[in-house]
Length: 414
Ligand code: AMP
Ligand code: GLY
Image 1 (spheres, protein in one colour):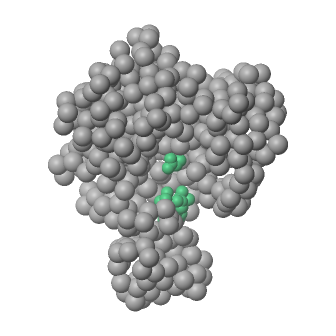
Image 2 (spheres, rainbow, N blue to C red; image 1 turned 180 degrees about the vertical axis):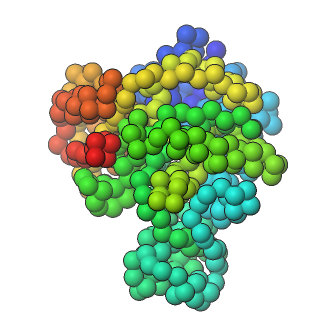
């Protein structure tokens, strides 16, 4: 059995690690992988968006199953190309991945199929957008929806800020033809519900919570995620049933009805508001760093799970009852500019799982090579114990240029 995992970060390391536990003893390749993944898989130097290169490699090596990590690979149509060549691949087609790539697509789908989400309107014209903002209330949420993604989401608390942001998103021609989704501002606790989806068959993973801001108490700039944990006391069984029926299942059915059935991981970024659970965003792939705390709990054989979904069948999935908690070690300065190449010592003394995000090997030594460098993930019968274990293990890792949040998981203890 030969498996190819596309991607290079902590999420990819967690996927590779789950596959490495398979009783089928697969030969695993990662493209391009990283220094941590290299201990479990053969890393091949092909970029995650090089569809031609990935396809050639998979055909030459007779890969039995490919698993896609990052959204960039989905957006360039890697799944479509593999399927057209008759290869098995886990992930959505380019058309289905629109649910993440286009906020306007996701919003239209949710309104058409009555999926609870914030009220919104979409604009390409600056004056019309400003008129809409002036009529509404503050804060207001402005989401860029065009080819220059990554300009992201701005929560404007003043009219001046809203105007400056809209000017930037709609009038600044260097970003080309853009669209802005303007949304009602919601409040509440956020959580991530990832599901394996094969057409209309939907199978949930444990609910997780990301910590997006750089510093403790959710202060500082937004990041790719500074930590996560599973088992959220504030998501009740009733909440879960509601989210599965009214959101995840309904969207999977909607995608089938629209002629773009979804295959892979559908990630619901949800918020428990005073008016009920609502969708903040959808992603068309495993979340990062949620995957790093969810997949360690996978008890079923990962190959069986991914293969079932790739063949459009419902997977049979079992999870451990443990709580998990992961703390990210990031380079000082991240998410702004930072230096690389600092030696990291002590990871071999860590009992928890360590997934590499941005590391490299230099002259035989492990060094920092990215903004987020690694994530330490502890498992324990309770979340308190998992938090303690993760903290103890973090203290064993020595490096001159790393920082981390000390409050990951605290929201569960409120
Ligand atoms: P997104 O890229 O859509 O996930 O948005 C990034 C972050 O902005 C989310 O994780 C939320 O914390 C926040 N956010 C997005 N939309 C809203 C909204 N309608 N109301 C309040 N916060 C939001
Ligand atoms: N954790 C947020 C994301 O994966 O987009």
